Picture 1 (cartoon, helix red, strand yellow):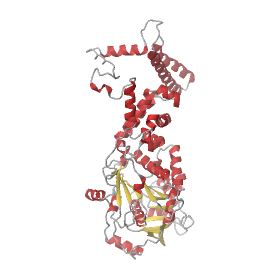
Picture 2 (cartoon, one colour):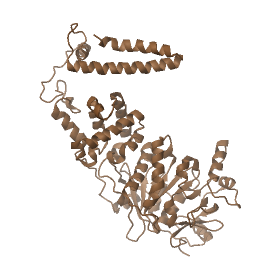
Picture 3 (cartoon, one colour):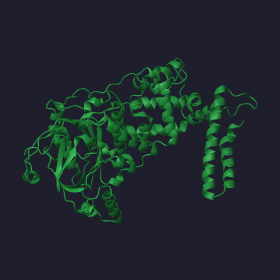
Picture 4 (tube, one colour):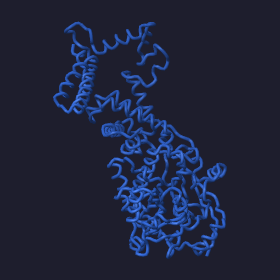
Length: 545
């Protein structure tokens, strides 16, 4: 027998009986677990090949570079030929249609999304923002959606990171007016967010945000021979930025969920999504994000999308998500410590028991190329767990060469569509022009013309400070801004009044924070009150005249 696959089923391996993954139940999601080096990637490749043969497109993250070999024809190695014969079929080397993707645009076609498409929740997760900062991000998105000029552009003008940075700067400069409309905007919090943006930019985030944005239809194509395209995301370098990796994949899932129509339970999935190193998605994730993951995983099944998480242990996945994963493959776990033994027991408890197997013991005894398997049967119930020998892949195991990768990309069906970035008119250009045209605030870099360049268009250049008088001039400017040293009883200017109010608010905030820490360390509320008065007096006294 050449192909052991049946109509509507993928042959995965053999234990006491043949193990098939039913295509009609493949959108009920799945989980592949096991210690590093026990064969998870090979099992993932076997599943991806089976889906491709059945005409189902696949998206898979390649975190180690090993999965790229699926783009090259396999070899009839003696051990593969023997294993196939033992499983009841003749080994046949094959190759599959593959498209390579890379967020950085080096090992594959670039994948981009706009800031607006990512949304405030995922942007907050990507930037590791606290509750106050997340509130400001929500204000920024709402402001962009309400502003007539920004609203008239694609994505409300929020395309790339420089758009977001310029919008935050604009909100900071106009914080009083914006706070009165949308809620308090703390200028110090905006500054912290801009620093987080810099971290993301240094991790390569500038390459991900932009246009042309990914069209999910390009992930759901079949080759002319009817085989589903296997989309491989080069994620080896991306893993050095785990928060970017996890947030990107969650965005992709969310985008599929929002854009695909309802199809119920189709005879086979429209797309299967493999999420390797899945624990990164759940590490330190806030409740709002976990709720979104659970919602997407629970409901995306009806869009015809199957999601398969790949990680070391089932306990890496929250229970609410784990309950949605019906198809299971468990590779070996090692139990060297009490913690390891607890993890093995937890993994064993996720399977439907088999009276012929001590599941927890077998998990520690599995060899390379073996797994405990439980797939959904008719009616959606999981089969009894079975110790299974996994079939050998038909494509190459291991990475392809750079030359082979280039050859695959050269004949890619999306060649040229995403390779050149586009910078449309967006928030950066609009807000810069608005500030320059208004004259009240200078656009970023207005003083780049050198000393004496005017910050406001049409205003005479300021004189350069005299040599040796820098600190004197700074002191004079400080006194002028806050109205310090004016004759007693002389009125403040409007700008001096605003500056004083801002400074007093800052002083009060600092005093409150210091007092709280002082009270906490001494255990005395009275001491905290006294500390607050002292600090507030020291910071604010100079502004009372």
